[in-house]
Length: 248
Length: 248
Image (cartoon, helix red, strand yellow):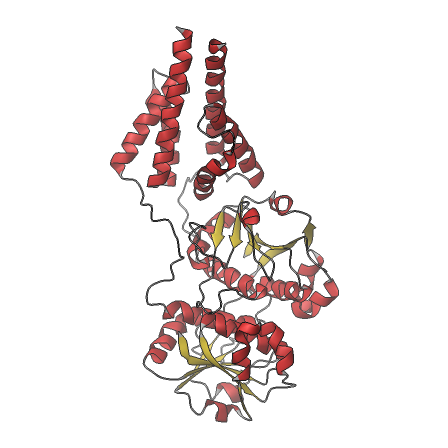
């Protein structure tokens, strides 16, 4: 899906975070992880967080000594930052940038998304090498995200945009909403049933039907629910029939 | 922002994950973390991942012995799952569900988002207690997300929706949504009533209640609708009483 999009981690500190990043990359279909000057890189510490599923992403990691060298093969580089002060202009949210990222990668361009070290993020020296800056919306209480969570959010936005058709959950019910004709049939059936069980006043049933009608108009029944309710009414009327027959 | 939305972690295994969840909660402004039967809960192991910023969220954690007990005060519970087989109907993505979650929490309702254990996720026993299931779109290569990343994605979608000012119709009914405790009372009353009118099979009423429960979970009854339905059940049971008395 996102095979032209790579994740570049600049001076990451904790191998465990890199493991979590690998798992996120596999979840979202991102192609490659590149490390620049990693501190204490240890594949063994990263693997448990990656799970064995994403182990191959750790094995294929490329490591570079400078960001400029790492970015050389990419047509576009998006830097991420939690600092959105006025001095950093034209910053976009991942949601805003995702359509262009996907357009570029679909056109065959290699796209890098660059994340800074856990404690300090990217400095101007690194962001100067990027074409565009991204920031993830947060509350003001804590603007800095965990590294792997930041990677997840950016890739997740790209993944959503990469799906030509919006992601459809398998097995969703196909049931259509009922028509207004069916709604009238249902209201009539309900009115008659509720009169028969003395729940509605015979003299002015429409008035007492109002809250029920409002209820059903709010919920927009589907066909299977319509069938359920019609069946329930039939059974109630059958019971009333028994009560009346026994009474007479 | 999301102060009426709480994160419920069912049987979480690793305190470090709970720390990462706390940080994500502070990033997105979520109110409270609730643990149900945590394994090896250790605040000291969680704190480094939470960072000192989110330490207060760990200190204020509530712990419960059962999910039902944990969910009692919430009007809405959203369960999360990576399993989207046809047998789990009506699942939504976080993006699809977020507008309704924000609408509910803006209306003052308490909303729970429930996440299962890292290795197995939620089983049917737990999802039966939820009103709605959510699944995060992924590639087919790895559908299961790291726990704290899953929390981040769901809260992030809610946070984004919460930034838009909600459109408020003047004079909208003030009626609150019913709580999960009230929903249980309603389900019990419905089950007994439908058994009495021979609409539900006495031998396996739970099975036949499922479509009805799905229906009610979809429509989220309000207090006035709850009163209407409870009154309707009482009247049906009165009629059945008459039928039985006449029969004997």
